[in-house]
Image (cartoon, rainbow, N blue to C red; front, side, top):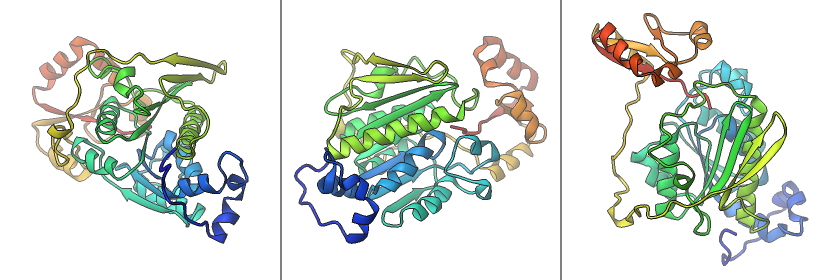
Length: 337
């Protein structure tokens, strides 16, 4: 459990009313609900997976919730990102999520960060929280979360979805495996993410709810945690696989004293819409839209070229791009987790 030796405080009457169904549970009761109240959870991403986690962990009374997401809500998000509605289009996801969640539970505190999660800000963000819930859809972000959760001794609750299948596990818990033990950092960078695949909306909700449940169990110190293995759930045949994670042997340990919390080892170049338009005025740049053709047809920028992400796996694709355009090119990526 979190904070096992903390001096327990009294619960206010309005909290008794709101959380009574938790408090009467033998394994949670008053002490467990106070630990929930004192817990601090950071959500990296506010998309499909984290939508359901946010709703339930807000309702259960987590004391401090942090949300980091720089994306704006688009119509295609509403298929699975159930925290939003049609009135939220073009609004920052973290901001919109906070607005809805505070209506569900005004007793908790919610902090938002409407910028990209990266190596340069990971240390300061993760250091403030007890548990990190990973709702990202790319390997780079997951490796960063894994690295800094290890350095700062934070619990990393991982979830991922692919079409009809979802995965979930708890990393860096009681000296257990890390995300890097599940997927080696050097071998999976080319995997597709939610920008290039379809997703049945309910799988995001199921995985998010499992993540939320694991967070409550860890905070209250109840049940068995998904530690040392991961669960793979398939909606098509309602099958569940429990797969043991074998830690990577002889891996290089990260020295905590060598990490600067204000480091800038990795800082991806993200371009805002206005900056993108400015760059495209110069003939030295070409915009390549890597979404699927159906998405490209629905909406795209003028003079852009559609080359789906999966085609980049072919060696000749990049050669043909350089040969044909003979200029710098920009990849257009829309996050749709």
